[in-house]
Image (tube, rainbow, N blue to C red; front, side, top):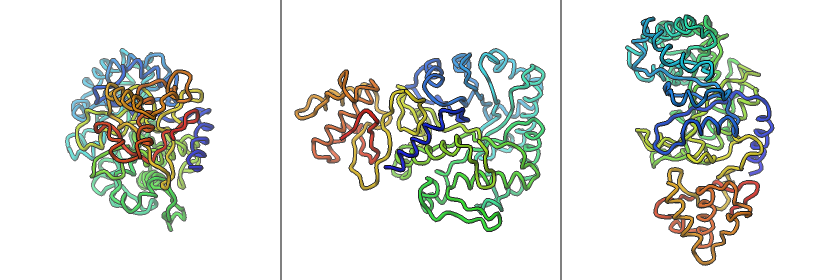
Length: 443
C-alpha cells in the first residue's frame, strides 16, 4: 500500500508541470455524456492536454473549439484507397478539417488504424500514398501545422527477441516501413505505435514484467541494458527496428496504451488492480520524461486508452472495459488524472493482496440500479449511511455511484462479507482494491 501512495504522490507532483498525456475518446456506447460536457471536463478537471478520436465527428470537433485541447482525427481504414487521389484528399480536408481548424486545434490526421493487423492488402498498399495525398491536401489548404500519421499494432516485428535485435517483418521492412518512415522523416511527423503489454503472448508467464511489479527482468547482452518492464522493452524494440532502416531520428508517439478492468473467464488479468498498476506506472514514466534505456530523457507523446468504457463495442466482453472514467465523469480508479483540488475519485488505491475484500458496483451498472442498491442497503438495520449525507465525510463526490459504493460495502461488511451479501441482483463485485480516498475511509 505504501508503494502505491508514493506512486500517486509522485504523479501529483509531476502533473503540476506541462504533460504530454492525451486520451482516446471512443464513443461506441449509449450512456456517454454530450461531447461539450466531456470537453469542458477534460479542460477544467483533468491533466489531459489532447484527445484522439476514431473518426472526424463534427459534433465532437465543434465541442472542443477554443478549449486549447489538441484533437487528432482518424480516417477509416475503408477510406484509405480512395484518398490516394489528391482530389479526393483535398475534398476530405475541405469537409472534415477546414470548417473546424484552427478554432478546434487539430493536430494529427491518423490515416487508418492498425492496417497491418487487418491483413487487407488494399489498405496496406495504399496507406503511404494516402498519407502523402492528405499531406499535400493540408498544405494546399494552408494547414502546415497539422501532421499526418497512422497508428500501428505491434504485430510489426519479425519475432519476439531482445530489443537490440528487433527488426520489422520480412516482406514489409523495405516495401512498407521504409517508405512510411521516409514520409515521417520528410514531414517531421511521428511514427505512431500502440504498445499493449496486456496482449503479449507471454502475459501469463511475465505478468509482473508487464505490470511494472518486481521481477527478474531481461538483460540485453548486446546493448548491455537491463529491462525491468515490458513497456520499455517494446519502445526500444520499435526504436531499434526503425534505426536498422536508417530512421532512428524519427519521433515515436504512442497512439494507444492501457489495461482493461474487467472481462470474462477468458480474461483473468483484466482487473482493476492490474489496470491501476500498469496505467499508473506508464503515466509516471511519460510525465517524468525519463525515457527508456535506449532513449533516455525522452517524453513520448502518449494517448491513454481509453476515456470511457464502451458498452456497445463488439467482440469479447473485455473489449468494453478499458475506460478510466464513468459516464458521470467520476474516475473508475485513481492514477492521478484529476488536477489538484478536484474531487477525489472512487475507487482509489489497490490494497495489498493480504488485505480484506471490498464490495463495489460493477462498472456498467445504471444509475437507476445504483440508486436501488443505495436505498436497499441504507434501509437495513445496522447500516450507517450518515457519512454519505450532506456534510458527511463521504458525501463528496456527490454522485449516485460513489454513494452506492459506500452503502454496498457497508452492507457487505455488516452482513458477514459473504459472496451473496455483495450480489445486489448481480450488480456488485468483490475486489481487493480499496475504494477509500483521502476524506473517506471504507471500513
